[in-house]
Image 1 (cartoon, one colour):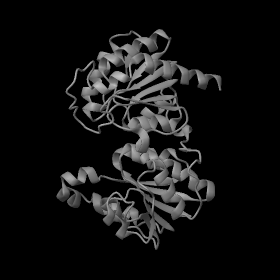
Image 2: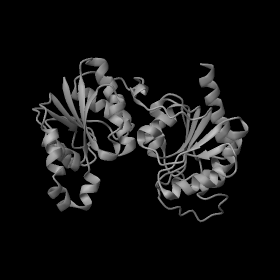
Image 3: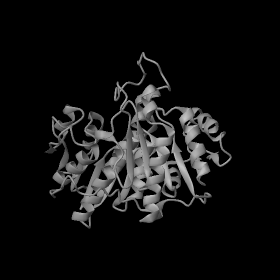
Image 4: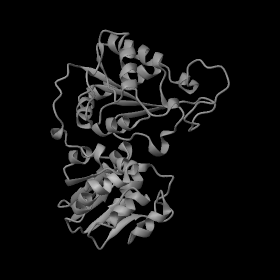
Length: 347
């Protein structure tokens, strides 16, 4: 059986799709997937053994230069790749008009996706011949797993274990000195940032326990923050260059423990199965938080949390900024991480 997946972005959403592939392979051992995905994430599907071909698109880049897209021939090449194979089924796992539009080009008599009430953009459901109803109250991973189960006609229990199916042999060897922990300190919203002074205090505790620290970064601002965090300990150091996603996955998979804010790389940490402490201040992990083996969520119980605001509007006294993270102090984070790492070592 050959199936085409449409799931272009974002990083967390792409990773959330992987357990559904594992479920499908458990029921159909001969199943093969091709995957249409944003060019910046095209490395990820290759880590799953059921993925045969990856078809990169550049919807984000093309939006900024539509005429350039048309004249460059990139769009024509994408359509040609999508139409190259005849598929038994096409699954739009995104539920947006842009992803539904991509299903038009696929050669298949059966195109599946979320129903009118379940799709992120209801009009997308008009492009499908088979529809799946899933409550918005369910976690994003379960929603996607349910979509695949109903599209491929197999049963799925809500308590079924999550298996991302990543083949670690497909990751490069980074030859980093250890043992080490990883700090994923970069995120988009200002309110999601754990205070820098807290990262510095945690770095001291981690290094005193005998661990080196990998401080990953993705842009110049994050690199400067990493350097400031690293300055408190001679055992903390900054990765000397910007890493690709596959290199980041390799660094994460060999770590003893990971601390992350609410960011896409946190979901990658969950996928590689390393003990991970995820910190949530203005957001709630209930519907989109990390899931997997050895994942611990620490959520703030501050008076206004979760507020889901990109900018903090709290008017009271602020011990730290944002104030919701005052409930997630470095001592608590370190104790939780230390416990999880000890459990893993003992197992």
